[in-house]
Image 1 (cartoon, rainbow, N blue to C red):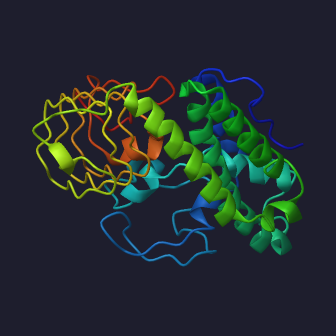
Image 2 (cartoon, rainbow, N blue to C red):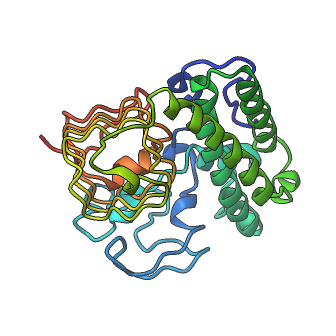
Length: 289
């Protein structure tokens, strides 16, 4: 049986809509540890080609160093989130039969996971867009896109693998940007006057001191905020779609009403229990104070 995703008929809170978009590793065949490859870097202690099991993977699909990933050099593993695609592919498309039990399904399973992961992430964003827009037409458009994607991730494998992901990405991106403009306008898209034109999509703000700033309504989509100091700043209505928050300082920052924040972004950042988060995201276990 395929995973049942949230209904797109009526918008509700993102927290409710996203329950089926959370990882359930116990019902996945470690697809993130096998399908994707990675290179030795600050995030990974070794090279691993795509389609091969990680050397830390146990025969029961558990991780042998799960509680020591960061000190062992596998920070990238603690940042990754499949948005629930892993269990959907494992239990839905492949009926709970692993690539070890049925080696002939290996390539198809890994390809399905790569596609489903992108689709599940789109659903994550669309659930928020539909709940936050004030425009009935935009809400209806988000609902239609969600219905299309939900059908794809709960239908036939052949249909999933033949889907035009690039075209679907473009449609979702356009809608997310329209909702972003609307939401940010409600915060007057003003933010901190001292920053002026620096606050823009794709901006290079690496290492910048943005501490205790009112950034409300800023468009930081795709911005480079690596190691930026955002402690105590107000990010209400800030578009953070695809923003790089690696090592960003978020202690005491208010992200509770920020737009398009994901768990991987938080997992890559630095924060504390004083950081205010959207209701459907959780504080990473390695945040302190």
